[in-house]
Image (cartoon, rainbow, N blue to C red; front, top):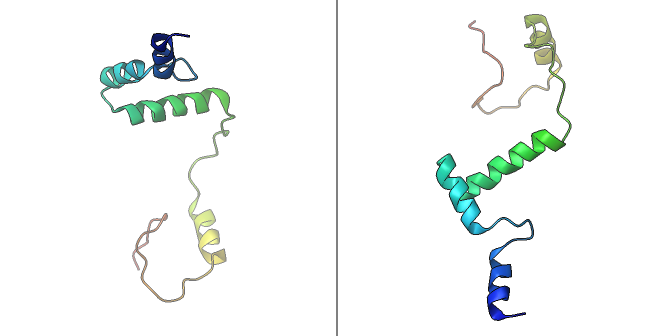
Length: 89
């Protein structure tokens, strides 16, 4: 194998995608090369991995109240954020 052939092999990854391809995709999509990889992984995950079934939507007030009652109470400290809407007293 010639040194030129070895150089060509080093430029191509195991998947056959060159750095040039990644750069071109980044330019077309308006993102950096790392984001190109993230987008590709996201596309592959939705194509090949099972997706969750849609749920019934938002919880009712009754369901929220049941969750609040059954959740352990915080011991001291202040609440920085919450997943639930806080009702005014």
